[in-house]
Image 1 (cartoon, rainbow, N blue to C red):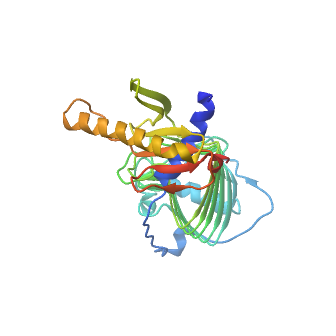
Image 2: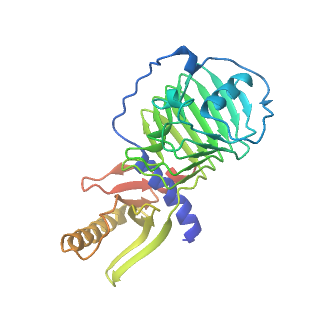
Image 3: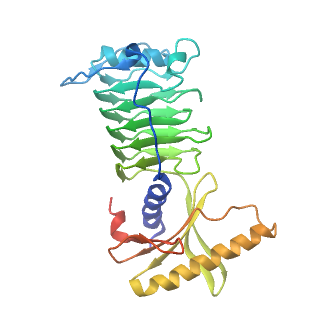
Length: 298
């Protein structure tokens, strides 16, 4: 199978498996009406023609309001202690709104001090925006619809953080880039009781092939930039699943033994998976994920 095609397929599998978590609790309340964006609808996108000087996050919120929540960005924004301190806990809170942001490849830098958005009961679309150095989650979505396209999420290195956290909502990511992010359970996307569509987005990483001997090999090792990796086998039918699972577990046990003996600094694989030509997705008792190739069509 062509390595480029394999990489696209497996990248989608890796983010969906690592991004889905079991539990999420969010506080939908907001402390001050002044810090929230209220509902407003407009048929066209207003262009806020500002100077190229970098604005504060408070400027970003005000630009959204002045554009009737249809903003064509014309400058960069950066979290500034003092005027932006009120956004440190929840970022810019969006309630009951319809918002469109055309980022025009400008950058919002949170300086590792805050999230960018907390979205509640709203519909938000963001295109062509660079979101960098957020704290905790770059965007938190609760009972809302979020669409991002050609958005770059970068350098969210604070512990227990990710790019997008969705609870009871819908997230459509297309042609986005997630890079240099850190979180054990879903550094890119985590969802709970939500719908997720990911199309042609980039998560960084490489596809490798593992072989230790004539009988010990793995079809695909997907390695992400932060060192996490997955072991994956490809099988044509259900009859080959058992064989593939045994092979994956054998390699995982080999790695575990090497770790215990101090012969390697790598961690155990994040997950084991078999991609096959069937139509039922499930997790085996031994923990191996079985994924129909048809699940990767988006």
